[in-house]
Image (tube, rainbow, N blue to C red; front, side, top):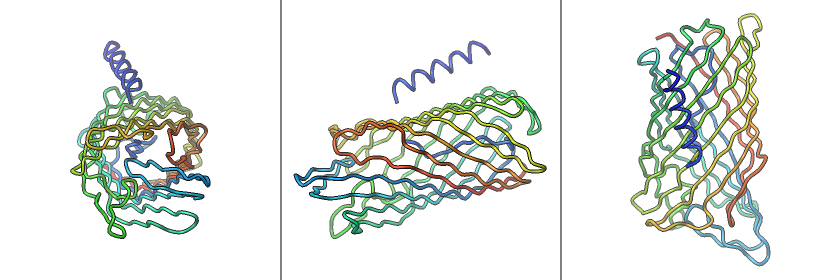
Length: 308
């Protein structure tokens, strides 16, 4: 077991050295052995200002010219998510999203798109799990995840007889593999959580390919018991890395990025219900060329748990 653990840690190190947020939040959950259904809302935004000389904005393969312009983009996702246990160490997570992508230039709306997004199915296997039941006070766990994002959402919506920017489309038009590693350690009323997720993006029928995405998260949490309720505050660090996009196998210059966030979240558990929220505050980012700057992000969720 010791050698297996070291091998997995080596794999994690190699992935970090090589690698979107797949937008699957695994979370920290006292009800580790219960099925769940969740309603989830996620929101983020980006912005940029362009001077009187005019610049060309390269956003994931499309080019738009702006002069004396302020550009703002908002991304909202409404999801229905379910986690079902197939075995005590094996569960599947399914996410069905509905998206709203919005862009404004100088306070004038130029795109406001609504549509079904690309669903995700993720298989999680608990390679190491010292926790035998939800009542266990101390535990450590190492989980491996593998899944796929499927091309259900539209990726060829038109606006004024022109193809919308790739970032404004509800879908991507591709099957994209997902991989993840998560380590969790809890002792009585505190714990740590570390995760790495990698998304290998494929090329769609138009020849466009998002760059692969890597996200890394780590932090500490506490467990506060108040009568029948449990409150889990979490503080940590979250990083996101995007590789170069491609059009017909040619690299789109200035499309890679790196963004780092402070991560604050809270989960409140009461009986079979849970409310959770998360806020990501950008603290540093490396945005190449004329890509838009990442703003803050937030997430709100309502879960219901039921026994398997």
